[in-house]
Amino acid sequence: MCVPHLIEFSKVGALSLGYLTVAQNSQLPFTIERVYWTYFTPDEVLRGHHAHHDLEQIIFAVSGRIVFTLEDVEGHQQTFELSRPNIGLYVPRMFWRTIRFSHNAVLLCLASKEYDEQDYIRDYNSFKTLK
Ligand code: TYD
Image (spheres, rainbow, N blue to C red):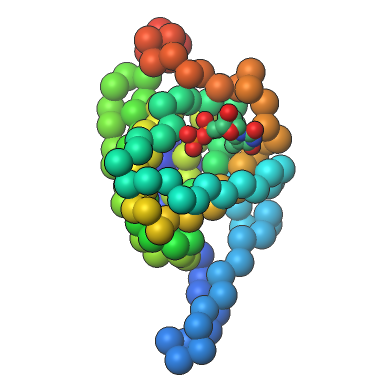
């Protein structure tokens, strides 16, 4: 499904023990080529401001709260609030994103490709011309 959507991953454990969540390629819409995480983002800072030509991602708030706004080239916007470590947001290629974090937030990203600056679209007006 090539639209942004939430994916619920199963939780192993119990409230009294703590939980474990696993992501493995056989259950994902793409093969993981890279994992990165961001943290200590001050809550007044808005990150993102880019889209990707080809990259697909699944984003988790493994800690704290993350508000992820996605816009397609037609201008349709959707906002997703992530605060549960077993819920991932699937982000298809070609969505402009802005991201706000609570200060304690840790964003974990599973990505379909290795880092390539050429895959970024960092100019909003250029993005809007890529219909
Ligand atoms: P960027 O993807 O713009 O972060 P955000 O969307 O969270 O604001 O990346 C920030 C910087 O980190 C940018 O200079 C590129 C660099 N970077 C890497 O070197 N490797 C990576 O895998 C990623 C995701 C970013």
